[in-house]
Image 1 (cartoon, rainbow, N blue to C red):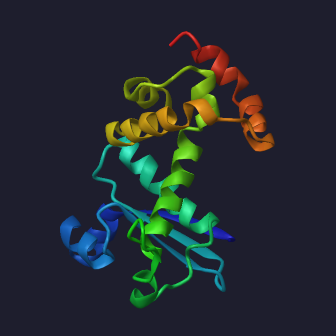
Image 2 (cartoon, rainbow, N blue to C red):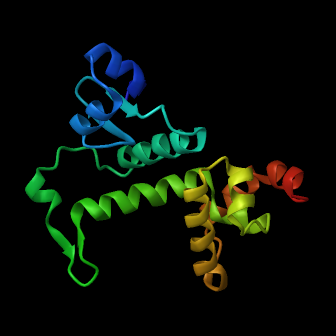
Length: 173
């Protein structure tokens, strides 16, 4: 991708003569959307800039997840509604959203770094990672679920190495 743009909802709504609610409805998202034109080398991330700083960061990371995970091709509504896990009741759309959430979580609050900091509470995760309260609660819950079965991969070891100074300076939190 040669050119990426972050486009806030407020500016887009103003130019289109719409309210944020009307724009959100037309985009089918209150949080954000991604549009990728590989032929033109353009990636546009539209995001609702009326939320908290943590919400905005999460939205942009989530939309980047869609890009890096290859979710930006146009899926038809019928394709999105295909049930891919009947037992869990998950459609293709649900799976793509969960994958983008996982990407955002690891980008903004890497589990290996939080474990190194012994940061398990939503409050501490929120402070260290600048996440919304909702995202911090979900991240704390996830960390609790993997506590006893968490192992470092070579990628996570590299993340820890790169976060070494951050961990050192925040270990007393």
